[in-house]
Image (tube, rainbow, N blue to C red; front, side, top):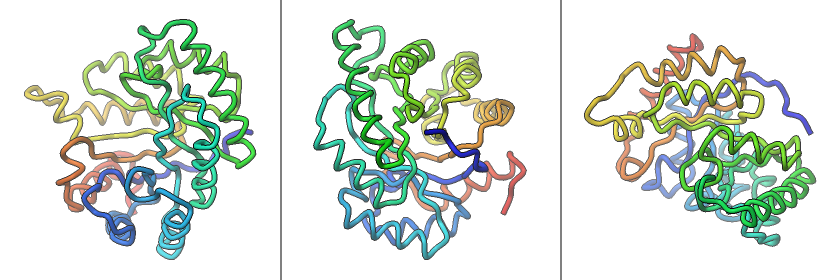
Length: 260
């Protein structure tokens, strides 16, 4: 199972607007923001097949693609029925990939037994996901095994499934590390989360307005053609206004030279 070389899609995560419970309002924001796609989250907006089918119809009618399903499945939990349900929801949604969490501890704190459990469960869920035509993509995040480049490349090799890919997501504190991670994991990156609000929070009080631009330059230079998703995080996701999303996507389009 190999990734199709489609053109990059620019969109956002539905979890950026946790305060908005109505799915049609999320799609309206996507239309006003000239977004190509939405990653629907499984915590609030798309919890079952019924809501998945509704979200798909709304997006189809609006000409918005659904790039991924943001599940909260923890690799290593070995919950086969839960994972099957996640795949069924993602399939009904029309998503091509599912976001997962790779364990619940940094790679440096993961012992060999836990690591082998992660690998075993990842192989199992990749096998099931392949039957649904889905990629499995762990969030690039602290407090998971996918917290650094070497760890991801190790487990990617040990799992050995083509449909096991990754997200890229910066913490906006180590530019050289971020650029190196993009370079070394480029063939495996399915989606990128960009968060202007998170950048401001992480870099306060020394905000670098060019940081994300440098990440975007690197992402383009390695030939990335996946999903570039704006994500609001923490308290901002509860109080963020659609005007911010519209401006952020416009900013990215101008940077990439693909203004609609």
